[in-house]
Every structure is written in C-alpha cells, then in structure tokens.
Image (tube, one colour):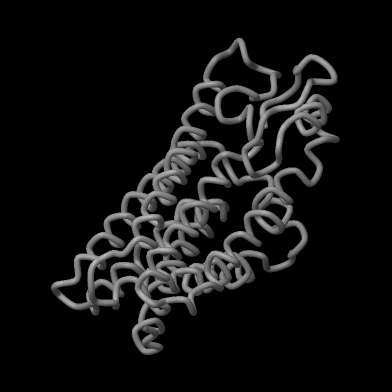
Length: 267
C-alpha cells in the first residue's frame, strides 16, 4: 500500500533536521557531520510513518524497532569514529570543487541531497508499516537478511576499530576477520539491511518500493561507497593493491593467494 501524503509528510521533517545540522556544520567548518545524521534521517522518517500506521500493527512496531537499532548504532559508531578528526577528506574535496560560497551550497549539495535520498530510500519502511496482518515467510526472510547485515556492519566496524587501535598495526592493511573475505563488510551489511527491509515490505504487498534497495545498492557500489573510497587508494596506499587482488570488493568470498606481504596503511 502506498500513501503519497504519508510519504511526503516525512520529507519536511528530514529537511528540517538537515537544515539544523547544516547550521552546525557552518559553525564548525565541517560538513562531515552529515554522515552521523544519515541514518537518523531514516529513523525520523520511520517515526513519522509509525505515528500514522494502524495502532495495532505489530509489523509497524517491528520495523520501527529494526530501524531504531540500525540507525542508532550506525550514527553512534560514525560519531565516535570521527570525533576530533576534522572534516573528512572526501568532503574537503567537495568543498574545494564548489568554492566560492560552499558554505551556502552545502545546504543543498550535501544536506539537502542526502535528505531527499534518505526520504526516497525510506519507502520500504512506509510500505511495511501501513500494511495489516502478520508476517509471512518472505517477511521472516527479510528479518533474517536484516540480521545478517547487522552482524556484518557491527562486527566489521568493531574489528576495524580494534585493528586501528593497536599501535603494532600502524602502516598495515586490515585483512583479518570479515575483512579477509570482503574489502567492505560494513557496506555489504548495509546492502543486506536494506534488502531485508524491502523483503519485509514485499511481504506486505509493497513491491513498488523496489527502487529503495536498488538505489541504496547503486550508492554503495558506484557513488559514495566502494567506488569513492577506492578511487585513488591504490595510489596512496601501494600495499592495498595486493589486498584488492586477493579479496572480493563487496560480496564475501574465499580470499585468493597474496602476491606479496600485506604491509601498508589501513583501509
């Protein structure tokens, strides 16, 4: 079931949150804070949808709970990881490419754009929350896929943080744990989470929300995820090229044989 008015009602709330964060970014000269806000935009949308869902909908409560766990964990992790680090180099490049007046431009280039993307991608949350009835097999598979995604995201982030915290690993490539099977377990986890949300929506008749996981997959693979992170990493970190040669980029798989010892900077 698609209710355009309910879907649209979340957009102003998301954009207002983005506008407030933009003000903070101007004061701090750091638009990186949008990364912490990203998942919270979805949580805000989920809250708006939940308030308009049937009061006796167990499915709506479940989806809100899953969205809350995912959003708060991701926002907390990114905030902790970036604390005191200054503006991320990706946003520094965007800033350089959009001067003069980037402070004003960032309102729509960074915060507005991410707000609209989050609103579009939130469609499965809407579809699942508005549908009556219990979960079927497809919905249960969606929960299972969501769980796989949370494990990859959470464990992958924890393993990388632990690796970087060890001074003995300085100048080395992280190729242990989940990172041995995929160069981006956190992005693969995000992929699973949003396809999981889609399956829950599909179970409720929300086939029309297929654009959401497709768009998220495109962003992860071609825009802000793998492609952006690895755009010049082989040049900046020579040992990473060996890691690329023996490790799947996205979907987990058995590692290949290393061409040379794995020494270089962390991914």
